[in-house]
Image 1 (tube, rainbow, N blue to C red):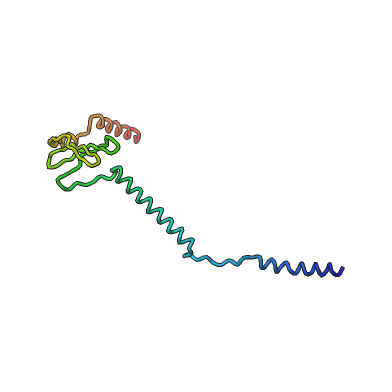
Image 2 (cartoon, rainbow, N blue to C red):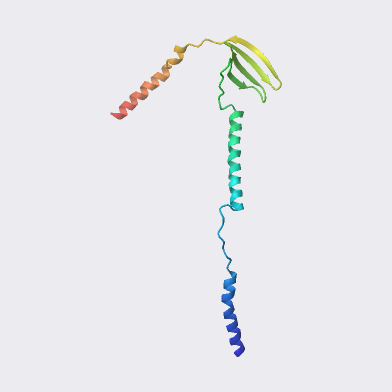
Length: 144
């Protein structure tokens, strides 16, 4: 019977010791740890890839219009195949229609620059003028 008490006392005394040694000691993490630095660099690389990808898409599909300050100006361009294009270029008042393919450029046609009438472009079309008046009338009716 005495052995049982000694066994119970020894077993109950060892439990707090096991409980104390089982806890891990937490150390404060550094803000400049390797994990945080790699996460930051990964985010930076991702943002740079997105920026470069958008720049490539804008350049590839000609979504950013170029400026022409010299004597040569690109008037229009259209793709007619996978790698072929028809381009209209203005050089000193003359329009050149060019066929552009990989490794060669052919002149398809040459003509003088068409005269534009500035008064014709300034006046609104009749349908758009009618729409504008109808729209203003409907706004005035709703405000009354």
